[in-house]
Amino acid sequence: MKLFRNSVVIYLYCIIAILIVGCGGVKFSEWRFPYMYPVQQGNYITSSQINQLKLGMTKDQVAMLIGHPVNQFMFNQNQWNYMFQQNTNDKLVKSYNVNLNFNESNILLSVESVGQVFAK
Image (cartoon, rainbow, N blue to C red; front, side, top):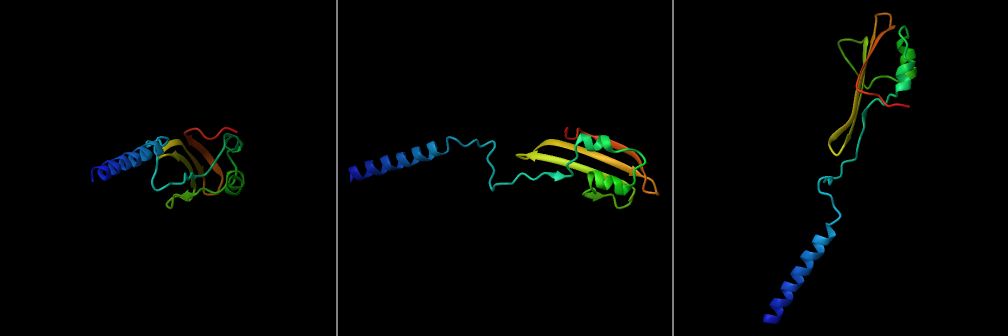
């Protein structure tokens, strides 16, 4: 009976040791359950695309250059907002916002940028 009790304790210690060693390479600060695939949100715009924007361009020309915005302000169809956010492990890594304002004739009036767009 004593031999059985000792062998159970030894097996229990071995299992605990294997579990501890198996988790040795895991960084629990970066561990996610369930796994969340990193998804970038918004429009990917480079600084060269922003530099090609010229006042007086039409909406069609702007759309050919940088694409249509993901979302548009429903009460002002003459304002286009381009937003981008990149998150890693629930931490914001990069973010920018570009606002384009048009007049009633669909001519670009102003370009406003918050944050740094991608250099290329």
